[in-house]
Amino acid sequence: MSKIFFITFLFFTSILKAQSFMGIPIDGSMENIKAKLIAKGFKLIQSNQNNTYYKGKLNNESISIMVGVTPKTKIVYSFYITYDEIIDSWNSLQTDFNKKNEIIVNKYGEPLKEKREYEYPFKEDDDYTLLALESGKLSYLNVWGAVSDNNNLSILLAITKDKNIALLYTNVKNRNIAEKEQSVIDNDAY
Image (cartoon, rainbow, N blue to C red; front, top):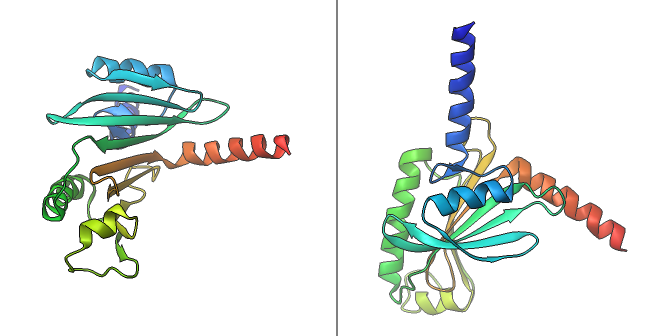
């Protein structure tokens, strides 16, 4: 009996660890997540019906976190993390991106998708890469899907047009719930 309990405990522990950011599961209620983020030193900045915003530190870097919840059941489905430092050099942005990418690769393996897409008139390796980024004509990101034990967590790492690095951790199951709830809300409105 105790062997079954131990195996079950290990299974659920591995699921929780695999679906977390800083050891905080991307699941559960907004209040539960709020308590865990505050316990890790984050400060609540703003809260509204579907999102809550925090500021804090990760590995001595200032970050902002937006926690997304489903519209009706208020279950957490995403953490959108942005590093607050604005970097005004393309080489520095790329270096920072590559360092964070390496950390994620070491934990979850190679990304499923890498996107380096330039829109006209910009092209790769010209002197206007930063301008392409700022004008929204460059997509620079990596995507990991189904990285948890139960294929329920996806991760996106990107360089934003605001010249910083962003991470998006999404609980796929809960995001699907959010989409269904929003669809019901939209259908009821019209």
